[in-house]
Image 1 (cartoon, one colour):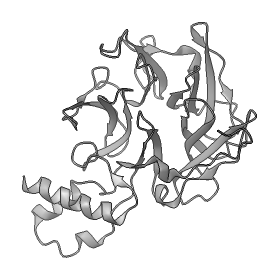
Image 2 (image 1 turned 60 degrees about the horizontal axis):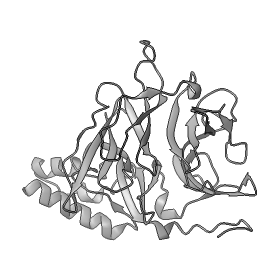
Image 3 (image 1 turned 90 degrees about the vertical axis):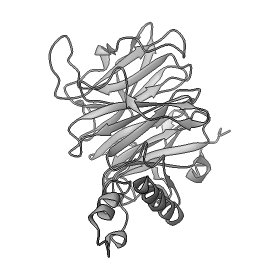
Length: 313
């Protein structure tokens, strides 16, 4: 109990100092490497990724909300054997996309491919994962998200792009995805664009990239708008969302009022100074902001996004 009180006190100090808050400290954001939260559309189930410290293995965890509080997470039924990450659930709650290193046709994978699972009602368990063969490539695929009209956006290291990793999209037509289309050089650079959060109507996007305008050193978060079929030049999100650390994994709450992202930004060295007891040192190291990844949440209004499109609504 003493350990949890200390973690709560650390969280309150961090929340006062920062414009955003660590999300669910001690449950989602811990001393482990935690990232990439997503939700069922009705807000009753939450998925996130807990990784090994060297980022070599990723496991999807699931938590359920009861009486207004999130319960202790458990390994999601479809995860735990291979590396799995980047869960996205469609607005109707019936289709889930994620990336995985699980074998394809019995052959092991060194990279991630996109998989999906379906269910008949939002209350059912997910069916067996299905490999989406038409989106596969020899490189890594990352972070699938979908518009309401069936266009899947994702990051990929496939050939034919503008950099090491680009953002691509493919449309769901007649029971399968079309040939992936690169978003072009306005969005994609010679460096890396990895994780797109596409708006449900496809008119705007927040994504993670390295080496973009205003780059602070690692992955940063950017916004762009689709105006008359063309994407606008990316702009970095306000300073509170970007740092010299990794800032990635953008996500919105089901009602669109809360913005979540992942960062490995750490607390300053000051809290460690003067710590004389090993117990206190371990409590600091086994808490958010220890240098591993944590999930952050902020009021979505603080994104301060304004579409430059002439037909903006």
